[in-house]
Length: 302
Image (cartoon, rainbow, N blue to C red; front, side, top):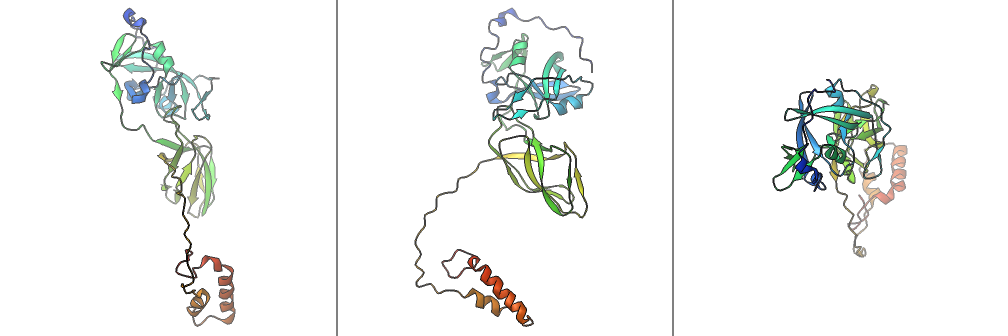
């Protein structure tokens, strides 16, 4: 795809110049999107006026092909202080209603969607008309799309190549995508599921981060399993951590509660063919773990 789409830039409306970006703050609060095209694919681009730079997913750039990725020294951090990985910078020819809008953006594997930041809004003299529900771009009205449902789930990927030994569980280092640099959230969870035959993920509670996550996996096969960097492990879901309520302890009167002779009850049920040595071993085992047995009806042990 050629970087120069050959279309001349439209003349800006002088009447709009004095009101550029008026009311732009809060655009993203309603999750406002505009539909644009890249390489024949329709993409919903988030208008994120709270972000100073425009971001595009590395997967989107790679899928479009023939887009030159240039090195970038710029660094970017999410709201929780974790750094967002920047692969480089690219200029992509986004199509809006048949006209080409050359958009320069930082490319990152840590985001899912195209996020048009305040730099893009300013560069294209954007004006948000709240009354009519339209966004003016370079003096022309654009149809807007407001998503009221939640954004895409955060997907989780293997961060680095890893070998899983047979019949063992391992903590896998992973990374996840972000819904927005400003919307990291607090706690997330990945549910138990099968990645592929014999390879499973255990339900894992994760912190508010997107790099160096530890996810418990188990290889139930008799063979070594290889996980390559970038392998998708599933999606994260937000969770609320419930505080454990304070427990009120009530005194229990055990004077009228008959004690249970656990040792005798267990010994009586042993098979008749047990030898004296085996019975002695069971006796010693019961004595060693006596505190885990219930000795009365008011005893909460099991």
